[in-house]
Structures are given as C-alpha cells and as structure tokens.
Image 1 (spheres, rainbow, N blue to C red):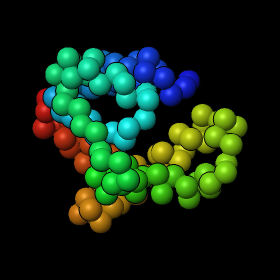
Image 2 (spheres, helix red, strand yellow):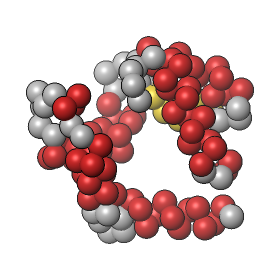
Image 3 (cartoon, helix red, strand yellow):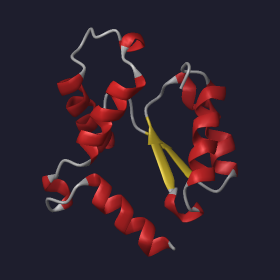
Image 4 (cartoon, rainbow, N blue to C red):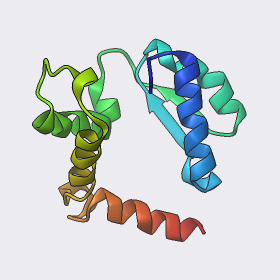
Length: 120
C-alpha cells in the first residue's frame, strides 16, 4: 500500500476480493488504525468487520505472530521504504512456507490452498 489511508486500504481489500473466491473473505479483524475507516464499505460488500480492543494484541494473535516473524528479516528501526519488493516477497515466501505448530505443522500456504480447494 502506498500509505495508510482509508482509500489505500479500501483499494487493497478490493484487490483481494477480485483475486480470491468470494467465500475466502468472511471477516476482517483489525486494530484501530485510521486506514480502517473503510469498514462500512467492507461490511457493505458482505464481509464482517471486527475491531480488536485497544491494548489487546491477543485478539489478533496470528497477526502479531506474523509481525514478529517479519522482524527476523527486517529488524526494528529498519527503514521499510528502502526494502525492495524482491526482498519483501522472499521474506513472505519463507514465512508462508514455514510449518507452524498452530496449523498442526502445516505451512500457511498449504492451509490456504487447501481452504481454497474446499471453497471451489
């Protein structure tokens, strides 16, 4: 996303909706960032939208865990504006192909693809 605006978030969500089966996006849970001001449009599209309580990171546990894994590649104080697309893509590829205990030692990519097959 080019910035943390409502419009940029809405565009990103619309891109997801265009590229995934409708049933793949059932709900969103977000923090209270200004970019999520697009929630009425998301709900109007038939996707439930939930806001985590303030200072309740455990309500978005998978997101917080993923942020921690991302820090293995890009430590705090890394200027993310200097990270090139290929570096980010490589980090995401490695993260999504790493087995997770919470997924019964499957990778996120395996689980995602399995879910997509169940939808179609």
